Image (cartoon, rainbow, N blue to C red; front, side):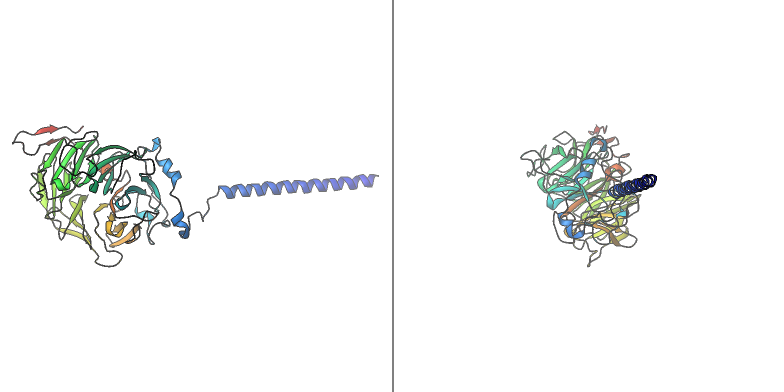
Length: 426
């Protein structure tokens, strides 16, 4: 009996040890499964073969459009991976961009924001963003407001300037009559490059009215206008301008005006004082000239093949990018601006349906979103993009916010000497 009890006890202990071992093994397996679930998958990137059907990143879109994101709605990307996402052109390096890129995708009637890896993280308009009967057509330029919470866009061929809320994806204000060109109180004629100042004033290059117009968000009439406001566009600033297609802010509080007719660039105050005028060297159709460093200016040649030209106030050539063949050739580019973190140049190459970053040290394209000469609206595609801007704090107007909107004296065209009025920028 004793031996039987000892045998039974030994068997019971064996079963207990086996059960304990099973419990330990089960806990270990559960822990491994938990770790696997939480660990990032190295193969989580969408496969290129499935890229065309992959949805936009709506989760991030919701996160950047929340109220907490108003001060800086888009991301900066210092230290990103050098590996491009599936929607970028081969050889693109996401590290050349410090943050997201706003694109005025004119042929698709939309604005999109693309991150350095090529993912669309915001777009306007989506279904339901516009009131019934309202259109948003052919945006040809778009810029973040100085604070980053709005985007101001020119719909040049539709004769309208629109202000869009980033967080709410809603139209906040419009100037102009959609589809109706004119020179009346609430009319424009091929407006280009509207600049929103920190105080809510708006400076518009009104191409076919040969003038620079100043108005204010919420208003539907110009506060002031420099230029002839007729269709005789030629170089005689400030009385008239040769089809001005840009009025970009400068660090000294003045503006850099580009005149298509005659290939002119002028530095001008909002009082109408012209500080200097020059010809960008060797350019047939200048577009959207801006300053990239003190005394160094950049314009693009809206031609095929296109060019990017850097020059000084005397019209001396400092650098030119203009391949006449091959994948580096530009077709009717309309806007380039500096990447302030590394000296590269961000450009929309309209006729090639792409946005590119060019390294001026090597004259090579180092980042590209869009397919060469293949318009489309799927992820990775654009259609005639006509404007770009970096996300704040690297955006055009954020970088100039400390100096734009300075007090200035504005004279209405046609007033006699001494009849100027003080236009207080608050």
